[in-house]
Amino acid sequence: MAAKNIKTIKILGIDTSCDDTSIALVKIQDTRYKILSNVVSSQVKLHAKYGGVFPSLAKREHQKNLPAVLNEALRFASLSQGEIDFVAVTSGPGLEPCLWQGINFAQEIAKKYKKPLIPVNHIEAHILANLIEGSPTSFNLPAIALVVSGGHTQLILIKKIGRYRLIGETRDDAAGECFDKAARILGLSYPGGPIIAAEAAKYKIQNTSHKLQLPRPMMYTKDYDFSFSGLKTAVLYMVKQGNYDKIEMCREIQQSIIDVLIHKTIKAAKDFGVKSIILGGGVAANQELRNQFELKINPDANMSGLRPKRRRNQKSKIKFLVPPEILCTDNAAMVAVAAYFHRAEKVKNIEADANLRI
Image 1 (cartoon, rainbow, N blue to C red):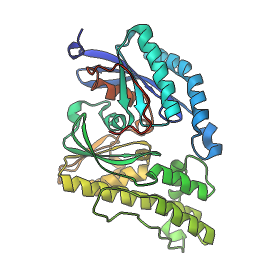
Image 2: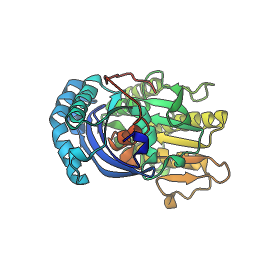
Image 3: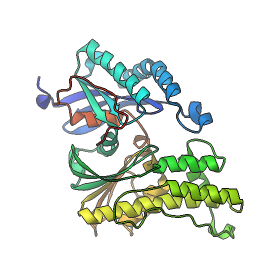
Image 4: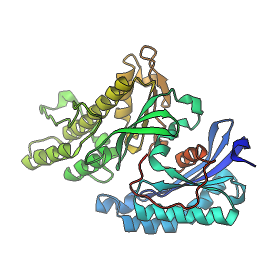
C-alpha cells in the first residue's frame, strides 16, 4: 500500500542525539497525533560530574539502554515490533557517536521487520512537537520558530511544513549552554537551566539592596543572530569581584537571556509579517520564558488561567505555540511526528550528521 493511502499509521521514533535515550510510538489517524508511549532514559546524573555531556560515555549508555527502552515503549503501547508501519530516527544534528547508536539500532529493527526507515532532522522535530495532540492546520503560516536548547539557538522562518529558512542563530554559545556555563561559574549543578530558574524564582526585589545589571548581547542589532558568550564572561567577572547575591545573579542571568530571545523573535515576527510564533527545544520548558513570551504577544493575558498549549492574541492575530514541557526536551515522540511528513521519501543510506542544517 502506498504511503499516501494509509489513513492510520504507527511510527516508532528513536532519538539518541545527546544524552537521553528515547523511544516512542505515535499513532497518526486523520492527521491527529496520539502518543502511545514516549519513554526517555536520562543520563543527567551520570554526566553531572563533568558539567556537561561526555560523548563517549553517552554513546556507551545509549548502547546499553536502547533494547530496554524499546521493550518498555512497546509494552506501554501494547504493540509488537511487527505492528509498526515506519521506523524513524534522528540523524542530526547532535553528538555524532550518540547519533550512530540510534541509527544502527533503527536500521536493525527496520531490516528485521521490513519496515521503511525515515531519517529525521532534530531541529524540525522540535518545531513539529507543537503538532502533537493537534493537526497540521494548527500552524497559521507563515510562522517564526525559535528553537532554543543546550546546543542550538535558531530563528527559523516557516513557509510551510518542510519548507524552512534559517534567518538567525547564535554566533557562539547557545542559550542553554550559557545557562550551563553560568551555573558552573556560580558553583551550581548541571544542567544549569532548571537550577538557575529555581534560584531565580526565589528572588524578591524588596529583600535585596543590590542593583545587579548584566548585558543583553546583540539585542538591538539589525540582524536576527544571537551571542551569549559575553553574558557568560560578565557573570565570571562579577563572581570574581565577589560582591553579588546568588539569587539576584540567577534572576538577572535568566532575565538577560529571556530579554534577548523575546526581542529578537518579536522583531523577526514583525519584519516577516508572520501569523504564528512557535517555540521548541529544552530551554522552551523555562516557565518564565513561556510566561513573558505570552505577555509580550498578548499583554492582556491572565497567566494563571492560561492553557499550556496554544493561545491567541485577538488584537495582533499572532498565534503562540509552545509544547508541553515534557515535549520541549529531547524525546522520540517529536521524531515520529516529524517522520510522518517525510514518509513518502525514498532514502537508501542514513548517516549521522552532527552539524545537520534545517
